[in-house]
Length: 276
Image (cartoon, rainbow, N blue to C red; front, side):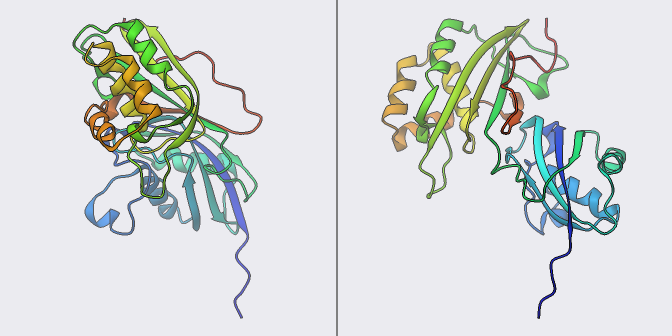
């Protein structure tokens, strides 16, 4: 007769990271450590094991791709309750051993039933475009060398708002239907930076980067904003291949925030660095 599961200590983590040297959030299986595949979840699990804690499960709210950053990734962490630290002590353990490109912003105890991904109301991504070359900001921006028409950029970007079939703008699995509710698409300026922000129920792989790439193509005069609308109304395989080739670099993309029931809506878009 199987014994009862060990009691759990459950924690909610708020994490930021520079994704430049990571192959995304998700751990790539048991072969990761053997082959040197560096992921954010794998780095967290390594520190937890090295501290002698008994990890049961670690899950994130969003599976950021290789090179994508996070300002507010949320994770749920389950440890065996016996010997588990208090939230403040757990934060000190993680802060003292994690690499410099991962930072723990907050640790809270939470109910074991809390699930970072399933319980989320929506997610917000921020993309930073620079209109000038930067000696310091290259890992966190996309420098577009040619002049951008902000009116055309705005028209293309805001065309994504609403209940949409984004099949032309995402790398979908066969079982995914491509529908997503995009609550708000915003454009803001901050010095030499153009900030593109989108908030939605969920996102598919490479969706935001393709949306940014499509909007920039319109701002450069390479495509018309009405094509964005047409490919949302009637997505085709040809459109998916076309916009896939136009995807923006991962360097400018940040998972800005994950919102849960009762959380306030995000304020105005703000840059992660100052580029006058």
